[in-house]
Image (cartoon, rainbow, N blue to C red; front, side, top):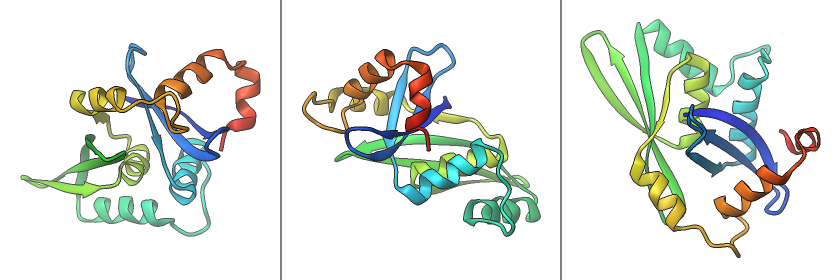
Length: 157
């Protein structure tokens, strides 16, 4: 999946990372904190900061120890909380690191690593949707489909 957009949900007034697969069949919104959204937005917009931000520092450490980020996987959804794993290769060793999805996505963007979402997470996300919940992915999906692309820019981070 790729980061399709980073927007502010106009109803919940919270940042949302929109992940979508290449065929645009699967869609996964993940509500994130403002600082995490900022880290993702900086990378998406190609902004270089005067000093390394946390995710830049992590990328630099990974490079210095001659490791690679193989992939990032959003692997679980429990009680409206998403979980992720970062898969690293250090020489012949493969490591799996627990992570928040927002941090994993921010690192994946910085290292040009693929982002995957397990099918069970997509299924749970769809099953947990409630039309009355301001964080409903179905409500957000309908809003994204109906919004004028030019007006969408006012909701971007």
